[in-house]
Image (cartoon, rainbow, N blue to C red; front, side, top):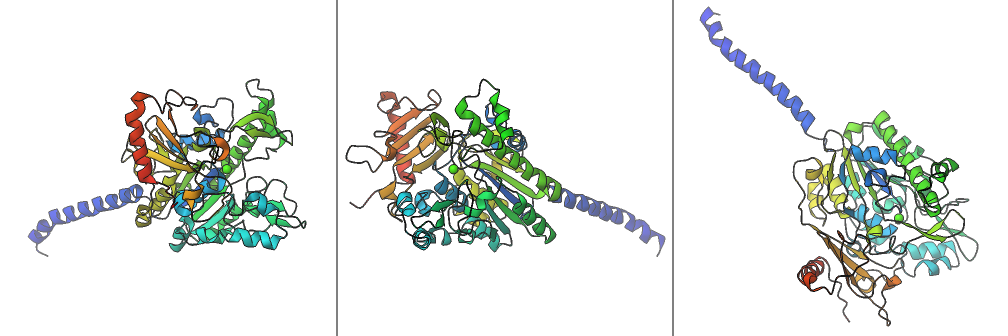
Length: 488
Ligand SMILES: [Ca+2]
């Protein structure tokens, strides 16, 4: 090669090397910046815990160090709401991304209701009757069904009201709609002929957390070995009653004069639950790939201990204004999202809802088209710090009796609708009886609260003149969301 040729090529080679070099770096930085399209997902769902009852939410007496640590590492949505305040329909929203009136799953117990189900003569009759509602979950694009269609393995553990885990599209699970001999803390009903039936709230799945974490550990290890993305539904029957935690959890609170008798057993169960969350997260950090795992935390509904004791003596009734009610003690939950290297630890004070969780998780798993069909908002842009949430968003929900009289007619069953926008919350009353009472008599008619000045929701301002304009706006928004008109 003549010398001038070589000289001529030097700058070109140098530029090519530089470009290649830059390209290498670009590829590396791209690999760091672009999250996996198939992150593993852990859904951690507390059962019956009031939104305040965590260290990170301002309760200085309760001990929840592991959830506090998760919160510290997460995008923290501290003003989260649940569309409804009782187990089954709230969990159904976390499976379907739909409001109860949209999925049709607005009850704990399908027709003819809990009392009538428990009076049935045989397990066969009980199971046949309860099964008549399972088409509602079988015929919808649930989160696990959509993920499984894209190569995920999805494990159900704990609370699950939809019969066999396969009904909701899980590929593996613990709940099989069969009673559990000898299980004392839930899952069974004893029928008139002495047979046990699966109560419908999780049966074998309820062993998770209370007795063992092994099914999750085995599942995650196997998925890792086979390089399969996975989803874990961890919804233990905690801190749900019975508040029968091991003694060490009671001992944490017995000597604290600021913790009342009725709080001790409940707080003990909260701490027991918190320990299991710590075990689960540590396991994923140690044996799986925490960098490629999205942790999602939410409560299914609130539960505030009242002062009235129950049997056994550790148990107390909950306040009327918490579980099942249209009030904040039943309806609020912090929502936490931790995805290391993708989400940013930060506190978000805008209103969000558990209706946002399924679209957020679908988006994280690269299924944006499915996410966009749902009513919720994708929280990832705010969680990653790339876009703020709207400041003036309204959140919505609905309260139904625990027992459904009918399927497919939510307008005939709904007891309350509610909307919160800014500091104002409107609760409307529906399907009143002849005495003008709604189910459980939570409100007589519609009520409006200013949650900034009245967080306990005790002062109804619906007739105050200066609230009239806001009230009209809330009514318009609520009706545009869902107006439950009956045909008669
Ligand atoms: Ca619950």
